[in-house]
Length: 340
View (spheres, rainbow, N blue to C red):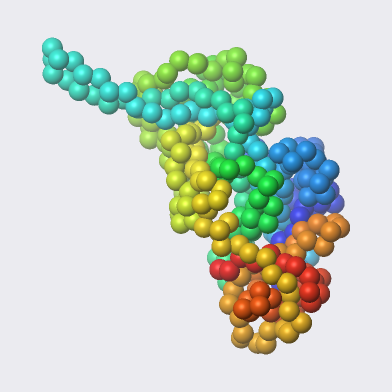
């Protein structure tokens, strides 16, 4: 049985093992930073943090192995006055010379700031040995976030953002950063990326504010702007399928593309619903696949499984006995559902 639940402070050791596989700014290979992230996540689920400052982390557990094997995240709001959402807006400029009859379209980058930003999803990691298994565990981790957003729509913004990783070098560096950002900041890509989570001042102070013409960059650098990396193409396909589109924005450090969608237009948010658990249980082979989420009101605050469900005309949902036991839910209690 695989169960997704709210992350807790006591998950530090296992979450750290998962973080080592990707080492991103949202979930870095750094125990001190992870300690702070998990503390904020637990307090967010408990309602102890101001609504739009909350950061939710979900962990996927292999209950048989007693092991955390994956994570995903929601940032209630990415971009505030203290810490704005910073990005390059990708545009174009047209030029024409009548005297030599030459027309050109130039790609441009313009540094932008959003002080009242969107909700952001991210931090999706699944250990390599669990990828490709029956049950689509990666999909489970990803879709669960949209079910949670639907359950608590008032806690999230009207737009959802996803920042995708671009192609990176074997050592994890970015050729865009080496050609652009490093010249202005003197920082390594990894140091700048980690620093930017809580400190945007050095970007405002040191990055060029003028419009940049990408034609001035080397060809290989231009080739990664707005391009999805090979390990993230599956995420791109999933996002497009549920209503996301390329936002003509990129990460100012590595050129990774930003995808966005209006929250209420996301197909998974629209498909989610609530129902009360029926006293009748599903038999073997009955029901259709779905995600089932339950909030017990105490720690771990939230947990969900992927399991067969059957919603009756009365609005009640029939679940299997194993599903009810894993969630700790009783007949008459309310659960949230996302048919798959």
